[in-house]
Each structure stands twice: as structure tokens, then as C-alpha cells.
Image (cartoon, rainbow, N blue to C red; front, side, top):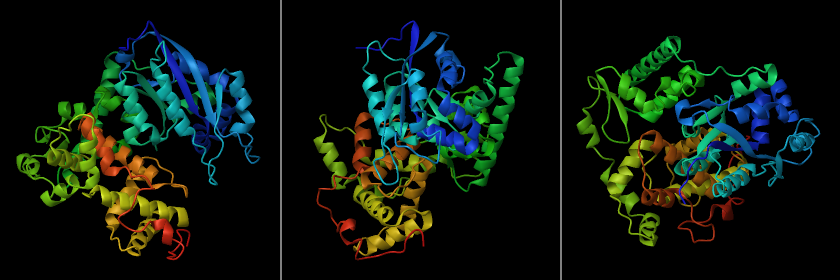
Length: 469
């Protein structure tokens, strides 16, 4: 059945209480207390949409809005050191009309799995009749990136909670954001963000912002010894100028970063014609034809294409996989800048990382070094720079490393990072190519035979320095 929006926009609100509460508490404890103890006070602006910064307001329209579903997910275990923890305030949410989903701790580190419950529920409500038009996800957790892909594929609007630390890949996928700054202003002072104003003054402000963004982009391109991937440019500019002048203005009113570059880069600056898109200075960098015709190492690409996991994915597909493997792999490597490793090598990194973090916890440099040493004790050589790249990518996706991290969980988050980088670079992957991405990175079942000893078997007999030492 095709999806057709109705005359009233039906909205669903999903609240990851601990994620939002702790984020607000770090910035403004008074706002966090108000958020926790008086949810009835901030529901109305969500229903009216006045706390939401839309990417393209004209696409949202002025339809009447109605919150038909409100769910709050939190840890019900009492924490006596915090009177505003979920166990102490859940009754306020019940009285405000929320359906409460208790998510008790699943690990010694108090990880409660609220994000997984939210993902499952959002997927279930996609099939609800009448259909929900807009999903508001109050969480800054980048684990929701695949959910936003799914919502976009089903032509639904999505809204997320965002702060300066929110992963660019997460914020770029949604239709609207509720920023921590705007939420704090409302909770503490009752002040709503000003709606975008039409007219000459507003246009002048957008022109000034666009010029500021382009000026920073030109500097970054000129400082680089080689063409720069546009997703890297977007992340750097956002860091330099801040979210309010980049994401919140939807890149000076253009909606997409690439659209802004195409319209406003000075004459000697340009983008490559095909995804993954690179920005370059024609007077300084390698001619683009020469650059685009220079693939990744042929040997590396062939090694990735011929690995058993990828070949099996092609053979097991319900329909014949019609993918130019060398072109597909080269494009993904260019778009994401990941180390050019085959599936077994990535799977080894994820397995040894999980074993190291489980035993010694996480400190970036020590964890990377220990992971390489741990692999060597099993006769496996890992590239330290590749391990560091994976750890950095996981951090950029907002992952909080825990001792109960599994190889599968680390692999899936890294997979999401690769997908986000491809999307930001303008590389649109087909369904068959998405399946190949899964085969490339997702770790096989722990019950399947390994090509090397299981790291967990000899962890005790090969002690390594603790991350805390």
C-alpha cells in the first residue's frame, strides 16, 4: 500500500530519557531538572513544532499537527545519588500522558538497551494505520542512523535531538532538529526559537552566512595537498563555525552542503563530476581526470572483491547481484577513506578490539596498541593505523565504549559510519551494494569457525597492560 499523508500531520514522540537528561545535566542542571520533573510543560511546543528547526520549512507545510503517540524509555533502577533519575520521576511522565517503557540495566556498566527498544518500536509503528507522518526521536545517539535511513525510504519526516557533539552523519539525515540550546532556553526561560523571517533582512543574513561558509571552505581546500572529500569539508566547517551557522541554517538555505558548493564556489574551485565528490583547486591540485582515473591499488581492490564473505553474499542473493565490483569497492574506499582491507581483516580487528576492551577497558592509544599486541600473540598481524582508524570512526559515531561491547556491535557501528560517509559524499548505493557492505564489515556468528584462534580463549594466558595503567 502506498503512503499518502493525511490532512492532519500525525506525530510520534520517542524519548530516550537518560540520553537527553544526562546531556542537559552536563550543560545546564536547572534545565535537566525541569525536563525530568515537568514533562507536561514542554510537550505543547513539540506538538506545535515550534521547538523544531526544520531543514526545509516549505516541505513541511502548515498542516495541523497532532501527537498521537508518546513513549518514554528509561532505567527504572533507583539511583539515590540523583533525585531526578528516571526511577524518581517516571510518575511525572505517566501523568503527562506518556507510555512508559522500563529498560533495566543489562550490564554491570548500567547499559539499559533503550536505543534497541526504540529502534524496534519505531520499525513496528511504520506499519501502523493510519500511518504516522513524523517521528520525533529525542536522542543524540548516532546508533539511530540506520533508523533515519529507513524513515527516509518510507517518505516519513524525522526529527532528532542534537547538540554540538552530535555526529554530522546523524544530523544530516533528519528533516528537523531540536537543539540542546533551544530546549534549554525553553525549559529555563520559556523562550522559543525565532521562526525564520522572510524578506530582505533574512536574505541578507543568509548571504552573510553563505559567504562565511565558502570562505572557510576555500581556506581548507587551499591548505590541503590534495583534493578534499566534501563530507570532510562539511565536518570541518561545522566544527569551525558551529552548528547554528551551518546545520541549523541548512547550509545557508541550500539544504545540502553539495548544493551550496555547486552554486557558490569561486571559479578556480570545483567538484568532481561523479560521486564520491571531491573539492579541488584547479590551479593547485592534480588534474581531476587523472585523479579520477587513478583507482585504488588494483591488488587491494581484487583482494576485497574475492574475499569469501563478499563472494558468498553475491551467490546467496535472491536476485543476481549486478555490481561492477571493482568500481563499487573503489568508490566506497574513495568516499569513506577507510583502510583498504578485506572482510577477514576487518573482522579480525573487531574481534580483537572487543576482547581487549572486555579485559582492559578503553583508553584510545593504549587500546589500539594492546589490540595489535593481542593479535600478534595469535599470529595475526594487524595494522596499527587501521585499528586507530576504526576506533576513531566509532568515536565519531558517538559510540561509548563498554566492556560488554561485542565484535558484532562494533562492526555494525563501523558499517553505519561507512554508509554515512558514502551518503555525505553523494554516493547512492543500490540494495545489492548495501548487502555487499554488510558482508564486507559485519562479523560472522561467534559460533562459526575462525581462521585464527579465538581471542577470548587465551586472553588470560597472555596478559597485556591495562588501559588504566
